[in-house]
Image (cartoon, rainbow, N blue to C red):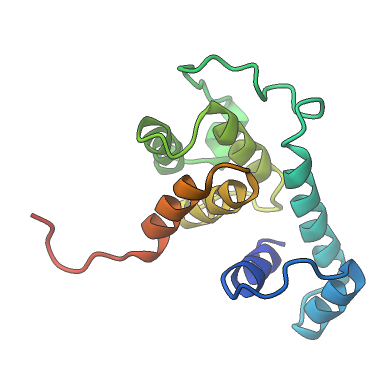
Amino acid sequence: MFDILMYLFENYIHSESAIFVEENELTEELKRAGFHSSEIYKALDWLEQLADLQKSDECPYLNRSPLHSIRIFTDSECDKLDINCRGFLMFLEQVSLINCTTREMVIDRVFDLDKKDISLDDLKWVVLMVLFNVPGQEGAYAQMEDLIFDERNGQVH
């Protein structure tokens, strides 16, 4: 499913193709690309649930977290997100790329992926997808995109 999300994100978002494509047409394109129907439907559902997270009625933590909250991760969250992933989320919050609301959206979306463990690279892509879908986060999205795509060569002084 994650491969499908990456495919959609890279081919529709970064290529600036028409984002509004009929679901049946998109499903057929993904099948032609070699993805299985069950995985396609999971990925499309994942994206739909991401859009639904913006509705405060369906997401109990939205608009209710204090501005400067501290996140304590559960055992299952620690199992899925290693120390590097949790540290990265904390870093993103400290530099104001995400806030407690978008952090919770990221964690929610990570847990809905059908992967046992999440790598730091996978987490970065999930953060990017969440920021892309949250209105008013264009600046944070651009900075996150720079974090993913700008590879520094040599020593930084």
